[in-house]
Amino acid sequence: FFVFNFAISWGPVCWIYPAEIFPLGVRAPAVALSTAANWAMGAVMTEVVKLFPHLNINGVFFLFAGLCCICGVFVYFFCPETKGIMLEDIEALFHSGGKPKSPAFVEIKSPQQSLV
Figure 1 (cartoon, one colour):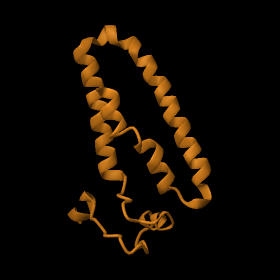
Figure 2 (cartoon, rainbow, N blue to C red; figure 1 turned 90 degrees about the horizontal axis):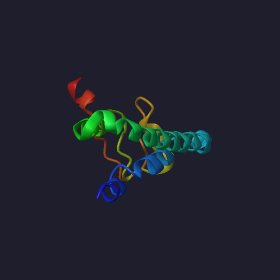
Figure 3 (tube, rainbow, N blue to C red; figure 1 turned 60 degrees about the vertical axis):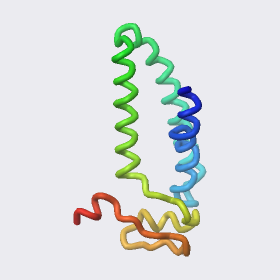
Figure 4 (cartoon, rainbow, N blue to C red; figure 1 turned 45 degrees about the vertical axis):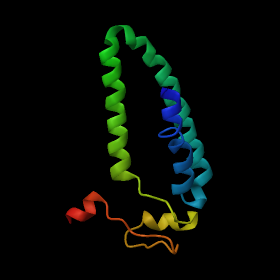
């Protein structure tokens, strides 16, 4: 159950999103670094199993629920939507005042921008 839900939600994000957001000049090393970080965190998660006897089932649930909430907040505030934008135009999203050239691009205000 967990593997299926992870595979259709958060799982692919760490592989697809880094390949889209980095500029062409640094894309290969940046994606390599993000892949290494992904594997390193996977190794860290195998060590979390050693905490299970001390945390009991409620502690394990709240540990992972808390991590999921932190990830959700991070994605909501810091990861712009890239749907309908060409790879070459995504860099413009990260520069102030830049507008992507893709015809399908529709600017969406982030929560921070709507407060200003």
